[in-house]
Length: 115
Image 1 (cartoon, rainbow, N blue to C red):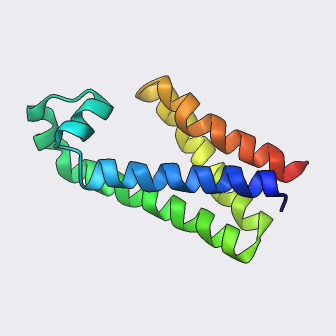
Image 2 (cartoon, one colour; image 1 turned 135 degrees about the horizontal axis):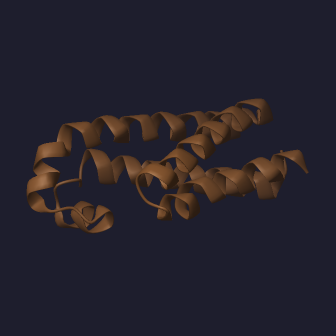
């Protein structure tokens, strides 16, 4: 695994840890509502769903950290692929911004693994 690929994988993992924190702990707080453009009422109603989503982001981060620690390109490809698919789906169903924030870094990481 190249240094460039490792750096991008680490960035993607850190992003998903950030998503976990936003969704599990800050969803109904000003920072979470601002990040996702939520009203206080909607944030309160959807808090449990967001926490579940945050947990999944944590699993993605854990997989990427495992790939880095073990220097396993195959594991990194799997988890980056999961992130890429989730980012594409989110980009088309929730917000186009997700394509840039989630899918693009994963795609770059995958590309670097193939170089």
